[in-house]
Length: 305
Image (cartoon, rainbow, N blue to C red; front, side, top):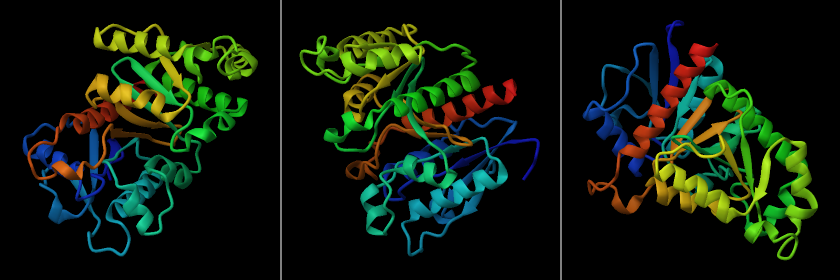
C-alpha cells in the first residue's frame, strides 16, 4: 500500500439492505468524490460490487458462516489498525442478524470501541450542527443512572479533542441539553439538572443545562436557515431525545461519526430499509454525504498534522 497516500476503508453494511444498492449507484454514476492523495479500500464480495479502477477491493466472501456485514467490518477494522488508516466509512447493518450469528453488539460503534480498546462516542454532524449522544442504545429507564460525572467528563473531553483536531476549534463552545422537560423547572419536574448538572457543567466549562425545547429548536432553526448555531456542539442526554428531530430536519443527511477511535469513522444516518430495496427508491445522498464527510475531515487533519 502506498505510504504517501491517505488510506480510507469502506464497507457497504448488510448486502441485502440499501447500503450496497446506493454504493453501487454512486460508483456507476461516477459520483464518488475521489481525491488524488487518497487510497480507498472497499471490503466486500467482488461479485456484489460494480467495480471501478479507482477502488482497491479487499475480498470478503459472502459465503461465510458468520454474518457478512460483520466479517467485512471486522476485516476493515483490523486493517485500519494494522495499516494506520485515517478513516472508515460503513454502510448500515441489521443488528438482529448479528445477534442471530452470536455477535452480541448493540451496533457497529460498540464493536469498534471494543476492537480498538477505545471509548468511542457517537456524534451526528450536519454542516455546523454537531450533536453528541451522552447515552446510546440503552433502555430509557437506565438513562439517569448512566449519566454520571465521569461519563460527562469523558464525553466532553473526547468531543473537545475531536473538534480541535478536525475543525481547528481550540476552545469550542459546547451546550448541554437538559434531561427533563424544561430542564426540570428548577427541580419541580425532575432534579438532576438542579442538584447535579448545573455544577457539572460549570466545572467542565460548558453551557447549560438548557431546556431541550430551546436547545433543539434554536440549533435546528439555525441549520434550516443555513446559519451557524450559537454553539459549536451540543450534548443530548439520550438517543431519542434528538435523533428523530435530526433525521427529519436534515432528511437523513446528518452523518453519524464515531469519535475517540484511532481513526475517524462515518456512517449514513439511516438503516437497511429492506422494504424499498431494488425499487429504485433509495436515496444515495446520505451515503455519499458520509463518504464526503470522511474524506473532507481526513483531508483537514492531514493538513494540520
